[in-house]
Length: 304
Length: 304
Image 1 (tube, helix red, strand yellow):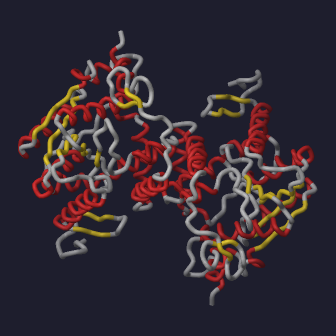
Image 2 (image 1 turned 90 degrees about the vertical axis):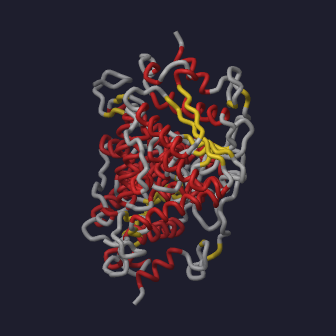
């Protein structure tokens, strides 16, 4: 089959809009989409220092390179934050790719480790018989360390590599768990809120497969393994079901994504956050309770 | 395995609460749940004339019999409305069961046919080459005919047999299609609104399997076939995926159901209905446009 825009052979079929594209037109469309997302949601202002959270996987490498590509023209300064959870056989290789990319682009970066900041590597934490859900701990720790790294690098914004599939999965899980406040405060760009660095997601409406294809066609070096801890997570199960539904009803994931956008605009008029934010008694960061989730889980991970 | 409440053999394992129950305790629990749903949501007032929409399947037969059982004590008058879509090989047998049950209980009833009210049976409508989605037409027609039948029977409320699975599927589809106004106005009991008879769903938090088991254990005669038109519907696909997720994460469907309850209470403070209701220029019933969906599809079904 040929490209719908020229006579070159098609490399991608976007079933949700029934378009076939060659390498160049696919790259062009994807680059345009990323830029439109950035513009439409007003992610950045001139002079912003943007910390990209880079694991070395396709999503974060594409985000880093896409923002670096536009940084001169937009007056942005790009820096990198990489988190080393301490997962033997998985993370070292991806950190190597992240560092190689930072160096190639001449981007300043910092690497924060669970060992230094939490007290133990994730592998060590998972040795505890009373802790079984790696993702619960890792999600909270990684989020905080990205925030800390970005702050230490003087960043005004944090950019993450979340793609359409990540977003659709989160939205679906939030719907089924009644997490409407979480839906209200998430989205492509989080609100400016004292004590938090706003987060932006330039790939939020690009399907995961297309991010992967884009990385390959652009010749980017990426880390392709899946985290060994994720195997039993609820998210993986949901991911598989959403993929099967998408396969039968192309555009389904965009439907979920758009529904959350709509719900957010409906909820914008009402304040559904029941708790006013307080400061954690241990670390001083924002929390809804006395002790934040990071300090609570950190204490669990390190208790004798 | 034995019942968790007595020493009799268990006939049901409710995995979401890890309870095993014998025949008597399962029947007792299910009857209690139906009554609690009726009480908690204040479905009825003394003197209400309640039209039960009865197809002859397990859900509607259980609803009819459950409401009939409490009708004397609660001062309710129960009547029946049955819709004959005109589906050869499927509907006649279920109507026979509905009529037998009405007669056994001494309940007044009416049967409305698509042939009389729409102009053609569903089988005839589906012969048109330009109409392929039976459920789209049938859903609109059946809903209106139930409303008409209930009004002609002088009913104050309409009771339908929607179970937890029906509700979870609808909620899920509404989430993914941004149908938040629909979520806001649905639920176990629809609001009193001029021109509509309020609808109640006594089985809304009973899983489908349990409704079926209850009907069997009570010895009710029910029609067990599935409608021959439903095979390719989006809803069936969603049903299968929700069942697989429930199987792995028991209680998942209750989670979806509860999330819609929560969203409804969040949305209660804001008016998300953008259109004020008008009267259909053809039939005079409520509609958001000039012509209601019923009249639009009826005209399609009958055009030369």
